[in-house]
Amino acid sequence: MKKFSCGFEVTMEVIGGKWKGLVLYFLMNGPKRTSELKRIIPNITQKMLIQTLKELEASGLVSRKMYNQVPPKVEYSPTELGESLKPILQELCQWGGHYAEQEYVEGEFEIVPPEEAS
Amino acid sequence: MKKFSCGFEVTMEVIGGKWKGLVLYFLMNGPKRTSELKRIIPNITQKMLIQTLKELEASGLVSRKMYNQVPPKVEYSPTELGESLKPILQELCQWGGHYAEQEYVEGEFEIVPPEEAS
DNA sequence: CCGGATCCGCGCCGATACTG
DNA sequence: CAGTATCGGCGCGGATCCGG
Image (cartoon, rainbow over all chains, first blue to last red; front, side):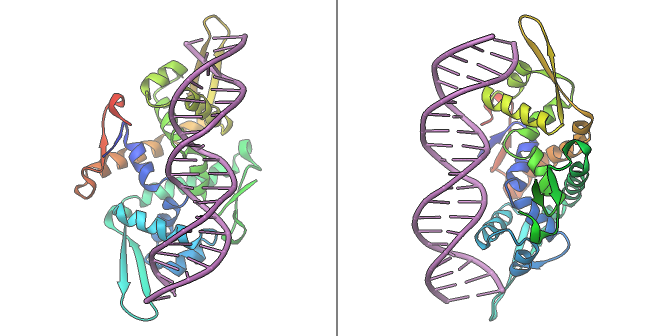
C-alpha cells in the first residue's frame, strides 16, 4: 500500500505522468475508440496509449467495452469516478491556457493544433 | 518554445512531477522558510526542495525573499499567479482524499501523517 | 541556516517489429 | 483495428559531500 501525506499526491498518482490526464480529458466528451484517441493525440505512441488506458482502467477511471467482431472494436469511456474529475480537468486546462498567455512566460509555451505540438 | 495541444499539458509542466504541486500547496497557507518546508515534507531531500522552489520561482508561481543577516533567512511565498492555483490545488487534494477511500481502491493508497509517508 | 555540486540508479517513455 | 514484446536512452529524483 502506497502511503502519502496529502490527497494531492494520490490524485497525481492517478492522473500524473505525461499522458494519463490528457487521455482522460479527451474521453470526457464521450466514448472513443483506440484509433480515435490516437488521431486526437497524434504524438502519443500506440504503446503509450494502450498502457495509459490500462492504467486508467486499473484506477477505475475508465471502462473498456469490447465488441466481439472483426475487425476488432473497442471503446473507452470514463466511469462515474472518472466523470467526477471532469470539472477539475477543465480547470487545469483553462488555467494552463491563461498561463501560457501571461506576459511573464510569453514565448515559453505555445498551444497549437495537435499536428504541430511536440 | 515548448508546444502543446492543450492547456492541461502546460499546467502539468508547471505543477507536475513529484514535488512541485505539493510544495506550492503547502505554501498557500502563508510564507515559509526552507527549513519549515523541510519539516512539513520530511520525505523530500534538501536538494529536491531547493530545486523545486527554484523551478516554481522560474515559473512565476513563487517569490523568494532574502533577508541579509546571519544566520541567513529566506522566505518563500506564492505570487499572485501562484495564488490563482489555490482553488485547483485544493480540489485536487480533496479529490485524492475521497478517491483513497473508495471501496474500489481501498488498501491501495493511504493518507498518513508525513512521518510515516513514503 | 541555506544552498551548490557530483555521482548514479531506476523507471518513464519512445522506436520498432510482430500477432490475431 | 487493437494489442504485445523487446530494447534502450535519458532525465528525474535520491545520496552524499562541500561552501558561505
